Length: 369
Image (cartoon, rainbow, N blue to C red; front, side, top):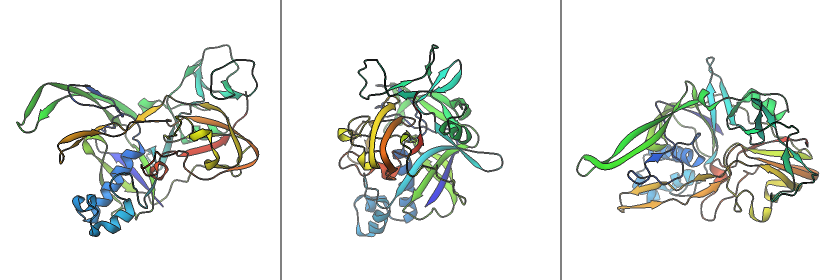
């Protein structure tokens, strides 16, 4: 297992899942950070081009590409031996150390300009159409406002321990730069009338980048170099870390009341939960979901791809993911353990989402309101 730090050379573009074509939908928004789909594509492309095997032989699964296919899988949704966790947002300090930043959990809200925690209220006299038995609650008569920002590692630890913490604004990590463009007619080498569009680029602050944990394939050699990442195949610098950042600790066994916090998006067959609400594949023991703080679903996929070989456009399947920062509250009867399985399902015939970084979590205890 090894870790990769990726830092941009210039602005980056990570389009959301909405179809985008000049003259039709003229604005392309960026998401931050990129999804695991984007990162696995960056890593597999690097391994492919370093192998010396032609992309055509790899696409056609020629015998010469058999060892490569074992490493990174067949073209499409087979990932071979490759295992990825992340991407996670990190910032390099002046002394060279890396600090991780995590999406603000959805059970954090703002009151009087300060962050406060919502907690489950197991027994209550209210009627609700919520799919879960417990409501999330904070004892106050003041208005609460939803928060959507970041926590650095120190404040993340404070959040997990129930201590006071402060929030990092997105503007401290990046600047969003909308840019205008016009579609080109490559056959005529001219612009296309009326085909204006706007794309939102991301300019990351100095030292801000992404951390990716990789397993199943050899480390990149050399340990430093350049990769292509995201829309327009923008150049980024990579560095294989000599000293690994430690994983976030997860209690074993789990507390009788524990919450699972998504660090990367997750997909479930029934929207916010697995099929038939069955959480047994993720835990050993008698575990029951009692409440949830869920962000609005994140649409991933759906970008149009120009397949010039077949002279047609096609669209990836658009799926609704539970976004990072969402929180699931559980109770256990007796001793329970996390099975160290990625907190996600995978649609049929689409590989293994957990294998490429979806469903990364951390777990901590919780107290009732």
